[in-house]
Image (cartoon, rainbow, N blue to C red; front, side, top):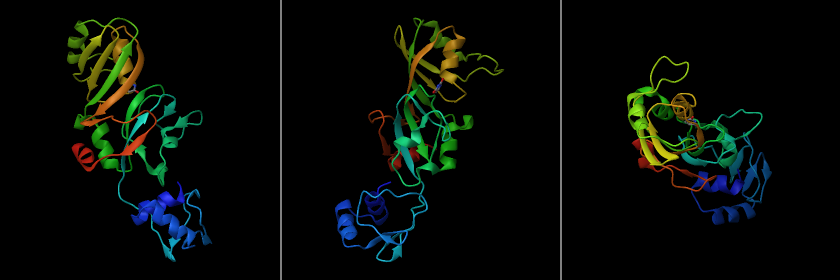
Amino acid sequence: MRLDKFLAHHLGVSRSLINKELKAGLITVDDVVIKLGAHQLTLNEVVTYQGNVIEPIIEKRYFMLHKPAGYVCSTDDPDHATILYLIDEPMSEKLHAAGRLDLDTTGLVLLTDDGQWSHRITSPKHQCEKEYHVTVSAPLTIDLIEQFARGIALKNEPELTKPAKLVIVDDYHAHLTINEGRYHQVKRMFAAVGNHVESLHRQRIGSVELDIPEGEYRVLTESEVKAIH
Ligand code: URA
């Protein structure tokens, strides 16, 4: 992360004020005076202002990301860029996705360092809704609404899926709301009824609705964070 952004965030003042302090030589990074706001900080570097160490903020953090296709949600994939490449925050490696999306799936990913909060999204016990926009390769039929509401037998799984709400938009497009998160669940639900998911996008988790362009992220509002309970 840029030094001026780190300082503005941790000292709670504007970047222009930070730049004056930088020019005045009041900031050090690992004991070296740094005057350039664009200086990239690395983890474990010690930043001081007027001789006082700036302790990293330890409050819990909550973000929404509009994930593009081609990024993985796990943090240690040797072959693909991870979603953390899109997050310019200090210690972003401490964040995790509250419910992953496949490499080719786009849409809403919630990121946090609060394990209890993300558990409320991912644990089946809490029944947190996830809404997906789905494009399929074969025409959708009305009877699927009933089948998905009753539960679907997924390949190699003894338990039916929990009741899911399917809204058919047109022959090849639907919105599917589920409140569990089994492995590749949406793709496997459509495969189980003889169809195939061409593209998949997550639009909503609980009451948190995706509202930013692809590739961008933002901090969740307090009410969005509290709405996940
Ligand atoms: N279901 C899937 O099949 N893939 C996703 O990425 C999310 C839900």
